[in-house]
Length: 276
Image (cartoon, rainbow, N blue to C red; front, side, top):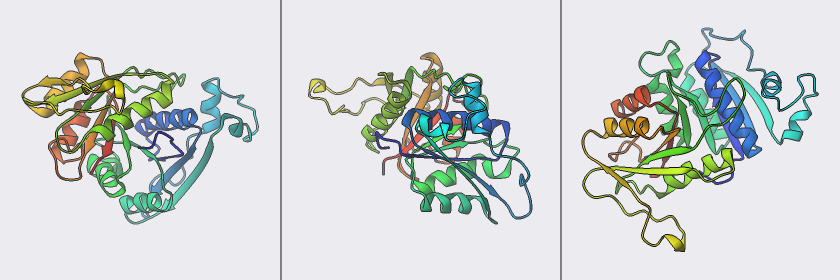
């Protein structure tokens, strides 16, 4: 992910969980002063055609970032641009990925209900398919997670980031992407915890000449998913950054049951970054 976020895409199904993801997408767009695309793809059989997009101005007023009666031009003063798009498409995944292909973005923010989802297109497999096809850094907000953006106040609580690392795929890009997103939101350095499940940790370079010895990596043994979740809980992690390599690699965050288990049990949002 580029250190500059010019465009964010948030597909929504208007559910309560999508509202939580929307708050994250909006806060990121505000911090980056970027374009935020709000996208709803309605299957032609029906759906939420009569449901309105989140009222951005009302949320910003609630966050005390603008006057509720202000002109929409006030968004320009905040440095953001909101684009709302509603598409009718027989296949929701095709609709989302087609939109992403036509509107290049630096980040996608997706709610995912996992296996127990009530909304068909936001079940885990659909959200994962969107990520696989788009290969764009994607922030997943799953049920029960403690988000790092408050829906009520817009306050950000992002202090510690966990990045599981392995020898392959090379994790440096994922580490930098997670750090860049956190810095964009907070304006400060955050604590980066790197975790390797195995006997010998990979050597990671930060790109700084002062860090010739490499970045420190915490070693754990046992089941990889359980180790990630346990570390996230133990260290009160606010976001997990997962390097992925398509359908290959031990740390593929979007590999069927592994992803579903991580998303189902992670206490915080998960940022998936393709490094293939």
